[in-house]
Image 1 (cartoon, one colour):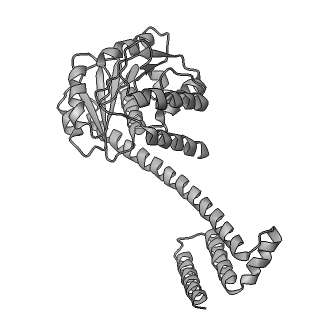
Image 2 (cartoon, rainbow over the protein chains, first blue to last red; image 1 turned 90 degrees about the horizontal axis):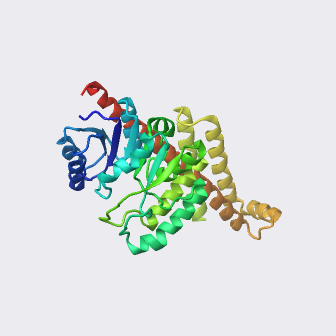
Image 3 (cartoon, helix red, strand yellow; image 1 turned 90 degrees about the vertical axis):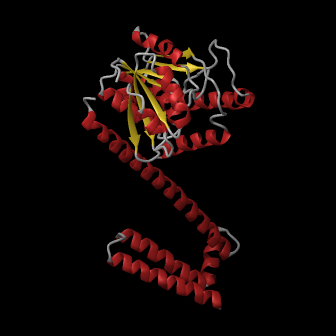
Length: 223
Length: 112
């Protein structure tokens, strides 16, 4: 296991095919890595176990990405992490972007960085997603959280340990993005968007996924 | 009428089941009284349909059966709403448990 102040949390659900590529790329960096296998029914756990530098935690059942990130956060904090990066297991995010995400934190200027596909980098987002789903998602995010982001539901983010401690993700599934954005505003954390490269293998969150997120947020407000 | 007999049989069985549940302590006083009253009211509505017409006229609805349908829809929606909240709450508790188990399993290897 690597000993670093920076912990990369990788929530993985049935990502046996792509996880190896992600861990191969991360192996050339000095980050500590925690893979949270979120009740996968494929060989995700076995794939992750092959990488000595990665610590693997397994949920006994599938709990959702938000829950997996919270488990990863707690374990990283237990290990003494000073900075935590949320990173996808599907190979869409680039390990080379991690330093850009953590640099503002290391300099003490910022508490949270959020990856943005629209800040300078050339992007290859599917047309319908770029011009139909994301603009609506940005407006809804602003309405629900009060934060105007250039990107919506980008899961690439870096946090200080203090933020991770206070964050305590309650939204177990995909609505955790909205919850985190809302808490950034509520707790007054210093935040910044950082340009990142996202390589699309598949469409990702569609319209149905978006409605599910809205429903989760709505129910959480009623509880 | 056959429908009245069938509904009455169903109501009697439901009330017997309710009493059995109460005796076993599976349902509280409030639940027992609430459900008991509901079944009795359904029985009254089936045997004395004029009562629903009387109530319907009181609240400005034409027919008694319409009132019964409106009330049933409202009650069903309320129960659905409560059920969805309860399911969500249980999901949250199951997730907490699963996360706890996962983190506890890691504890013996803390010095890895």
